[in-house]
Amino acid sequence: MHWQTTRHRIAFERPRVMGIVNVTPDSFSDGGRHVDTAAAIAHCEALVREGADILDIGGESTRPGAQPPGADEEAARVLPVLRAALTLGVPVSVDTSQPALMRQALDLGVDIVNDVRSLARPGALQLLAAHGSAGVCLMHMRGEPDTMGAQAQYGDVVAEVADFLRRRLQDAVAAGVAAGRIVVDPGIGFAKTAAHNLALLQRQRELLDIGRPLLVGWSRKGTLGQITGRPVGERLAASVAAALAAVARGAAIVRVHDVAATVDALKVWRAAEQGGVDPA
Ligand code: HH2
Figure 1 (tube, rainbow, N blue to C red):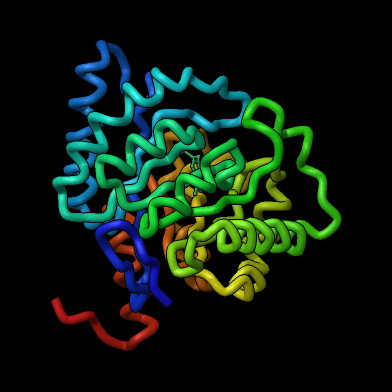
Figure 2 (cartoon, helix red, strand yellow; figure 1 turned 135 degrees about the horizontal axis):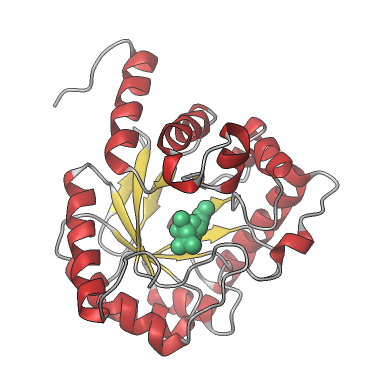
Protein backbone atom coordinates (compact mmCIF):
# COMPACT_ATOMS: atom_id res chain seq x y z
CA MET A 1 0.00 0.00 0.00
CA HIS A 2 1.03 3.59 -0.68
CA TRP A 3 -0.10 7.01 0.43
CA GLN A 4 -0.42 9.49 -2.43
CA THR A 5 0.31 13.07 -1.35
CA THR A 6 0.85 16.25 -3.33
CA ARG A 7 4.56 15.84 -4.10
CA HIS A 8 5.44 12.44 -2.64
CA ARG A 9 4.07 8.92 -2.96
CA ILE A 10 4.85 7.45 0.44
CA ALA A 11 5.64 3.72 0.53
CA PHE A 12 5.39 1.55 3.62
CA GLU A 13 8.13 -1.01 3.21
CA ARG A 14 9.11 0.30 6.64
CA PRO A 15 7.11 2.19 9.27
CA ARG A 16 7.16 5.96 8.82
CA VAL A 17 7.70 8.63 11.47
CA MET A 18 5.65 11.82 11.42
CA GLY A 19 7.35 14.50 13.51
CA ILE A 20 5.10 16.93 15.40
CA VAL A 21 5.68 20.67 15.13
CA ASN A 22 3.24 22.60 17.32
CA VAL A 23 3.23 26.32 16.56
CA THR A 24 1.10 27.20 19.57
CA PRO A 25 1.86 29.95 22.08
CA ASP A 26 2.29 27.47 24.91
CA SER A 27 4.73 25.36 22.85
CA PHE A 28 7.46 27.99 22.84
CA SER A 29 7.96 30.02 25.97
CA ASP A 30 8.02 33.78 25.62
CA GLY A 31 8.63 36.16 22.75
CA GLY A 32 6.53 37.43 19.86
CA ARG A 33 5.41 35.66 16.72
CA HIS A 34 8.73 36.15 14.95
CA VAL A 35 10.46 34.15 17.66
CA ASP A 36 7.76 31.48 17.50
CA THR A 37 8.14 31.20 13.72
CA ALA A 38 11.92 31.04 13.82
CA ALA A 39 11.86 28.49 16.62
CA ALA A 40 9.27 26.38 14.82
CA ILE A 41 11.30 26.41 11.59
CA ALA A 42 14.43 25.43 13.49
CA HIS A 43 12.43 22.61 15.06
CA CYS A 44 11.34 21.41 11.59
CA GLU A 45 14.98 21.33 10.48
CA ALA A 46 16.02 19.44 13.61
CA LEU A 47 13.29 16.82 13.16
CA VAL A 48 14.32 16.21 9.54
CA ARG A 49 17.95 15.76 10.67
CA GLU A 50 16.70 13.28 13.26
CA GLY A 51 15.05 11.23 10.52
CA ALA A 52 11.42 12.39 10.36
CA ASP A 53 9.73 11.03 7.22
CA ILE A 54 6.91 13.60 7.40
CA LEU A 55 6.49 16.91 9.26
CA ASP A 56 3.08 17.66 10.79
CA ILE A 57 2.66 21.36 11.50
CA GLY A 58 -0.26 22.69 13.53
CA GLY A 59 -1.37 25.92 15.18
CA GLU A 60 -4.33 24.72 17.25
CA SER A 61 -3.86 22.95 20.55
CA THR A 62 -6.34 20.08 20.73
CA ARG A 63 -5.52 19.07 24.28
CA PRO A 64 -8.64 18.17 26.27
CA GLY A 65 -10.26 21.42 27.37
CA ALA A 66 -8.31 23.61 24.90
CA GLN A 67 -9.97 26.72 23.42
CA PRO A 68 -9.44 27.04 19.64
CA PRO A 69 -7.56 30.09 18.31
CA GLY A 70 -9.26 32.37 15.75
CA ALA A 71 -8.88 31.29 12.12
CA ASP A 72 -6.64 34.26 11.27
CA GLU A 73 -4.43 33.65 14.27
CA GLU A 74 -4.04 29.97 13.40
CA ALA A 75 -3.12 30.81 9.80
CA ALA A 76 -0.65 33.50 10.88
CA ARG A 77 1.10 31.00 13.13
CA VAL A 78 1.26 28.18 10.65
CA LEU A 79 1.73 29.55 7.11
CA PRO A 80 5.30 30.88 7.46
CA VAL A 81 6.38 27.61 9.03
CA LEU A 82 4.75 25.58 6.25
CA ARG A 83 6.49 27.73 3.64
CA ALA A 84 9.91 27.01 5.16
CA ALA A 85 9.15 23.33 5.81
CA LEU A 86 8.31 22.80 2.14
CA THR A 87 11.97 23.39 1.27
CA LEU A 88 13.25 20.58 3.52
CA GLY A 89 12.71 17.63 1.18
CA VAL A 90 10.11 15.66 3.17
CA PRO A 91 6.31 15.59 2.87
CA VAL A 92 4.69 18.39 4.85
CA SER A 93 1.35 17.99 6.59
CA VAL A 94 -0.84 20.75 7.98
CA ASP A 95 -2.72 19.81 11.15
CA THR A 96 -5.90 21.87 10.91
CA SER A 97 -9.68 21.69 10.69
CA GLN A 98 -10.12 25.15 9.10
CA PRO A 99 -11.03 24.98 5.41
CA ALA A 100 -9.61 28.49 4.81
CA LEU A 101 -6.23 27.45 6.17
CA MET A 102 -6.37 24.14 4.27
CA ARG A 103 -6.86 26.13 1.07
CA GLN A 104 -3.96 28.49 1.81
CA ALA A 105 -1.73 25.56 2.75
CA LEU A 106 -2.63 23.62 -0.40
CA ASP A 107 -1.94 26.74 -2.46
CA LEU A 108 1.56 26.78 -0.97
CA GLY A 109 2.00 23.17 -2.09
CA VAL A 110 1.52 21.35 1.21
CA ASP A 111 1.41 17.57 0.79
CA ILE A 112 -1.10 16.44 3.41
CA VAL A 113 -4.09 17.72 5.37
CA ASN A 114 -4.29 16.11 8.82
CA ASP A 115 -7.68 16.94 10.30
CA VAL A 116 -8.67 15.71 13.76
CA ARG A 117 -12.25 16.56 12.74
CA SER A 118 -12.09 14.33 9.63
CA LEU A 119 -13.00 17.08 7.12
CA ALA A 120 -16.30 17.71 8.92
CA ARG A 121 -16.27 21.52 8.66
CA PRO A 122 -18.31 22.93 5.74
CA GLY A 123 -16.27 23.01 2.54
CA ALA A 124 -13.33 20.92 3.78
CA LEU A 125 -14.22 17.73 1.94
CA GLN A 126 -15.02 19.59 -1.29
CA LEU A 127 -11.73 21.44 -1.07
CA LEU A 128 -9.74 18.21 -0.85
CA ALA A 129 -11.80 16.61 -3.61
CA ALA A 130 -11.14 19.58 -5.89
CA HIS A 131 -7.40 19.49 -5.18
CA GLY A 132 -6.79 16.19 -6.88
CA SER A 133 -3.66 14.84 -5.18
CA ALA A 134 -3.11 16.04 -1.59
CA GLY A 135 -2.97 13.35 1.08
CA VAL A 136 -5.54 13.27 3.88
CA CYS A 137 -5.57 11.85 7.39
CA LEU A 138 -9.07 11.12 8.71
CA MET A 139 -9.15 10.78 12.51
CA HIS A 140 -11.80 9.58 14.93
CA MET A 141 -13.04 12.08 17.50
CA ARG A 142 -16.35 12.98 19.11
CA GLY A 143 -17.45 16.49 19.99
CA GLU A 144 -14.83 19.20 20.45
CA PRO A 145 -11.65 19.26 22.56
CA ASP A 146 -13.41 21.28 25.27
CA THR A 147 -16.36 18.86 25.49
CA MET A 148 -15.07 15.50 24.26
CA GLY A 149 -14.40 14.05 27.72
CA ALA A 150 -18.14 13.68 28.31
CA GLN A 151 -18.53 11.65 25.10
CA ALA A 152 -16.12 8.86 25.99
CA GLN A 153 -18.86 6.24 26.09
CA TYR A 154 -18.85 3.22 23.82
CA GLY A 155 -20.33 -0.26 23.65
CA ASP A 156 -17.42 -1.69 21.65
CA VAL A 157 -14.94 1.14 21.13
CA VAL A 158 -12.91 -0.68 18.47
CA ALA A 159 -15.95 -1.56 16.36
CA GLU A 160 -17.38 1.95 16.72
CA VAL A 161 -14.13 3.67 15.79
CA ALA A 162 -13.71 1.32 12.82
CA ASP A 163 -17.29 2.01 11.66
CA PHE A 164 -16.74 5.75 11.93
CA LEU A 165 -13.49 5.64 9.96
CA ARG A 166 -15.01 3.37 7.32
CA ARG A 167 -17.91 5.81 6.89
CA ARG A 168 -15.66 8.86 6.68
CA LEU A 169 -13.48 7.04 4.14
CA GLN A 170 -16.56 6.20 2.05
CA ASP A 171 -17.80 9.80 2.27
CA ALA A 172 -14.43 11.14 1.16
CA VAL A 173 -14.20 8.71 -1.75
CA ALA A 174 -17.79 9.50 -2.78
CA ALA A 175 -16.93 13.21 -2.73
CA GLY A 176 -14.01 12.58 -5.08
CA VAL A 177 -10.93 12.00 -2.88
CA ALA A 178 -9.24 8.87 -4.23
CA ALA A 179 -8.81 6.17 -1.55
CA GLY A 180 -5.05 6.07 -2.23
CA ARG A 181 -4.79 9.62 -0.84
CA ILE A 182 -6.30 8.68 2.52
CA VAL A 183 -4.97 7.24 5.77
CA VAL A 184 -7.05 6.66 8.91
CA ASP A 185 -6.32 7.27 12.59
CA PRO A 186 -8.17 5.99 15.69
CA GLY A 187 -7.57 9.30 17.50
CA ILE A 188 -5.86 8.16 20.68
CA GLY A 189 -7.00 10.39 23.58
CA PHE A 190 -9.83 12.06 21.67
CA ALA A 191 -13.10 11.36 23.53
CA LYS A 192 -11.60 8.17 24.94
CA THR A 193 -10.62 6.89 28.38
CA ALA A 194 -7.37 5.04 29.03
CA ALA A 195 -9.29 1.77 28.77
CA HIS A 196 -10.64 2.78 25.35
CA ASN A 197 -7.19 3.83 24.12
CA LEU A 198 -5.66 0.56 25.28
CA ALA A 199 -8.44 -1.51 23.69
CA LEU A 200 -7.68 0.31 20.44
CA LEU A 201 -4.01 -0.62 20.82
CA GLN A 202 -4.55 -4.23 21.84
CA ARG A 203 -7.05 -4.83 19.03
CA GLN A 204 -5.48 -2.39 16.57
CA ARG A 205 -5.22 -5.06 13.88
CA GLU A 206 -9.01 -4.96 13.49
CA LEU A 207 -8.61 -1.42 12.09
CA LEU A 208 -6.42 -2.74 9.28
CA ASP A 209 -9.55 -4.27 7.72
CA ILE A 210 -10.61 -0.73 6.78
CA GLY A 211 -8.10 -1.20 3.97
CA ARG A 212 -6.02 1.97 4.32
CA PRO A 213 -2.71 2.61 6.15
CA LEU A 214 -3.08 3.37 9.85
CA LEU A 215 -1.60 6.50 11.41
CA VAL A 216 -1.44 6.47 15.22
CA GLY A 217 -0.43 9.12 17.75
CA TRP A 218 0.41 8.01 21.28
CA SER A 219 3.22 10.49 21.88
CA ARG A 220 3.24 11.87 25.47
CA LYS A 221 -0.52 11.33 25.83
CA GLY A 222 -2.40 11.08 29.11
CA THR A 223 -2.90 7.31 29.02
CA LEU A 224 0.90 6.91 29.10
CA GLY A 225 0.92 9.13 32.18
CA GLN A 226 -1.73 6.95 33.79
CA ILE A 227 0.25 3.79 33.06
CA THR A 228 3.64 5.11 34.22
CA GLY A 229 2.65 7.78 36.76
CA ARG A 230 4.87 10.26 34.91
CA PRO A 231 4.15 13.89 33.94
CA VAL A 232 4.07 14.91 30.29
CA GLY A 233 7.76 15.94 30.21
CA GLU A 234 8.90 12.48 31.34
CA ARG A 235 7.08 10.25 28.87
CA LEU A 236 9.83 9.64 26.31
CA ALA A 237 10.35 5.95 27.07
CA ALA A 238 6.61 5.39 27.40
CA SER A 239 5.98 7.12 24.06
CA VAL A 240 8.64 5.07 22.27
CA ALA A 241 7.23 1.85 23.75
CA ALA A 242 3.71 2.80 22.62
CA ALA A 243 4.96 3.64 19.11
CA LEU A 244 6.63 0.21 18.90
CA ALA A 245 3.51 -1.53 20.18
CA ALA A 246 1.46 0.28 17.53
CA VAL A 247 3.89 -0.60 14.73
CA ALA A 248 4.02 -4.22 15.89
CA ARG A 249 0.22 -4.28 15.46
CA GLY A 250 0.34 -2.91 11.94
CA ALA A 251 0.55 0.91 12.21
CA ALA A 252 2.11 2.38 9.06
CA ILE A 253 2.86 5.83 10.49
CA VAL A 254 3.50 6.98 14.04
CA ARG A 255 2.99 10.64 14.95
CA VAL A 256 5.62 11.56 17.54
CA HIS A 257 7.34 14.46 19.29
CA ASP A 258 10.60 12.57 19.93
CA VAL A 259 11.75 11.70 16.45
CA ALA A 260 15.37 10.63 17.09
CA ALA A 261 14.48 8.13 19.81
CA THR A 262 11.56 6.73 17.82
CA VAL A 263 13.66 6.34 14.66
CA ASP A 264 16.33 4.41 16.59
CA ALA A 265 13.75 2.18 18.26
CA LEU A 266 12.07 1.41 14.95
CA LYS A 267 15.43 0.55 13.36
CA VAL A 268 16.06 -2.01 16.08
CA TRP A 269 12.50 -3.36 15.87
CA ARG A 270 12.86 -3.74 12.10
CA ALA A 271 16.28 -5.39 12.38
CA ALA A 272 14.71 -7.89 14.79
CA GLU A 273 11.82 -8.53 12.42
CA GLN A 274 14.13 -9.03 9.43
CA GLY A 275 17.09 -10.62 11.18
CA GLY A 276 19.37 -8.02 9.59
CA VAL A 277 20.04 -4.35 9.06
CA ASP A 278 18.71 -2.23 6.17
CA PRO A 279 21.40 -1.21 3.67
CA ALA A 280 22.42 2.41 4.41
N1 HH2 B 1 -3.10 14.14 18.25
C1 HH2 B 1 -2.98 15.47 18.50
C2 HH2 B 1 -3.06 16.39 17.46
N2 HH2 B 1 -3.25 15.99 16.18
N3 HH2 B 1 -3.52 14.23 14.62
C3 HH2 B 1 -3.65 12.93 14.34
N4 HH2 B 1 -3.83 12.50 13.09
N5 HH2 B 1 -3.59 11.97 15.34
C4 HH2 B 1 -3.41 12.32 16.65
O1 HH2 B 1 -3.38 11.41 17.51
C5 HH2 B 1 -3.30 13.71 16.97
C6 HH2 B 1 -3.36 14.66 15.92
C7 HH2 B 1 -2.74 15.94 19.89
O2 HH2 B 1 -1.41 15.86 20.22
P1 HH2 B 1 -0.34 17.07 20.27
O3 HH2 B 1 -0.01 17.56 18.92
O4 HH2 B 1 0.78 16.57 21.06
O5 HH2 B 1 -1.00 18.20 21.13
P2 HH2 B 1 -1.78 19.51 20.76
O6 HH2 B 1 -2.90 19.15 19.87
O7 HH2 B 1 -2.24 20.02 22.09
O8 HH2 B 1 -0.86 20.45 20.10
